[in-house]
Image (tube, rainbow, N blue to C red; front, side):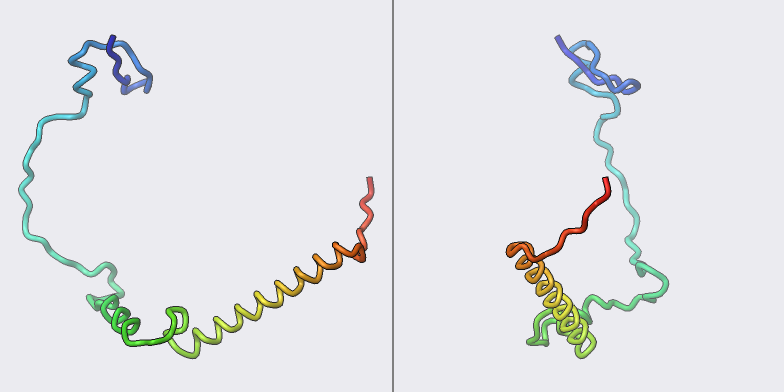
Length: 111
């Protein structure tokens, strides 16, 4: 017995062999003629300037890690974020130690 998917209900329904092996919507191959390719800038603000090549050159020339390539601004952001991470890890370790020793006071919840 053969089945095909009903396009309206989305369920499987009994079908003949020819209908099951040739689903609706699939037809013969048609060759499409294409015209000339016209390249346009991706947005009006770029005005055709290819910034990808510029960024590739910057990344190739620098010996710094990727997250520090653009200079002082990136270094400040990186060091600030690493400082926040270190402070957060310190607080987490402090609270883990307080919980492990039993010195952390619990707040009583009203029932």
